[in-house]
View (spheres, rainbow, N blue to C red):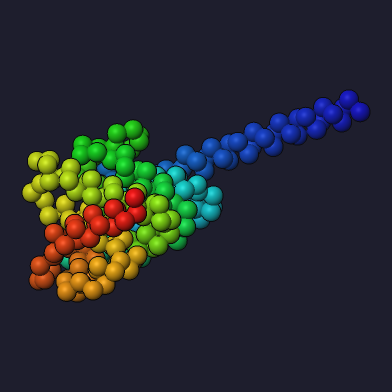
Length: 246
């Protein structure tokens, strides 16, 4: 009996250690090859570069909401959306290429973690999160681009939508008061979040607005178009939306 107990104890120890090691591996998985590395420089084709940025399916299957958001925020080629005509067109291309982005948009539980990361983002970088702040303005715009996706917004609870709307308005006000951002047209990324929430909510003021077509074009592209964007009207709708929920 003592031998059996000893065997069971050893077996339990081995299984527990293996499980803990597996959990740790999944929780700390990171992109093994990134721009700037020697291995990256040896890649000869775009297909090879796309391939090394895929997250293994077994890792995707076990990601927590926080880890899914982490792998999107730390995605090595996060700035590729700038290579196309509009931010949304660029993001659509990225979505077709990289499985971590498709994974995030397919989840119904990651919105809160994404909002928390957004609230942690200041005008110079993340305040507490241990992520790189390199090319910070572009990374902040990328985070806002993620948050303005309809799949993300539709997954949010009413309280989360209000929280995000409030934070997007705050970010816009911070940007226009900051010399690093005030002159950049990308300050409109904050406004796109606001407008996108209003559209997802089918907010009555937006539904009957004479500028709805221009606002819809802005939401769909994420960028300036031939139609003037009614920033003042979107701001007023946002204020009314927030007041109606408080």
